[in-house]
Image 1 (cartoon, rainbow, N blue to C red):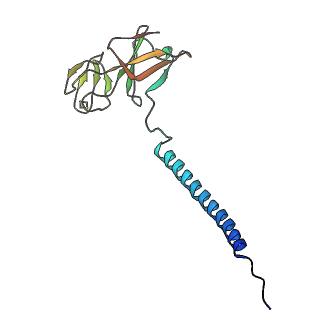
Image 2 (image 1 turned 90 degrees about the horizontal axis):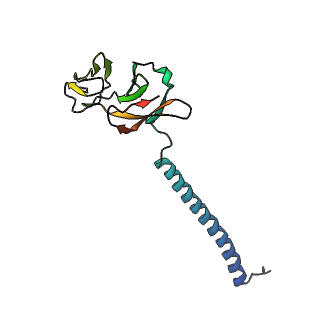
Image 3 (image 1 turned 90 degrees about the vertical axis):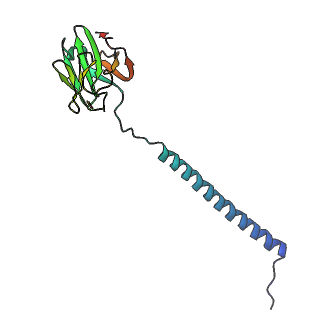
Length: 161
Ligand code: FES
């Protein structure tokens, strides 16, 4: 007894359909994996975390700094100076090699190599090559003082509060 044989054209048509489906599925899978790889690489290249502190920050209300106050905020590396009704922010990063300087009776002093600065941050001794920078200070809408360490201003420019 002979089994009926399908015509060659029909067999070929089934095979093509199966081949097309498998080819489409593998192509879709490959394309999808390429997209996912590209997206994950983009996410990896652009970090979501920032590791430094922001250079613009609030330091509190003007009344937190009584007249005559010279408050060093070591974590921010800035000294807030209140002179009467005026406020300023002076860098506390030594211009020699970057140590954190401290407030002294005569101005500022660096514990690393002995640089000394006057009350306005001008160099009075030691290896420091230049004066301490002053930073832009402004009043935020909520009444707090904001320091912008990205904007250096001329020494002696205070903000009236
Ligand atoms: S880092 Fe301040 S004097 Fe050298």
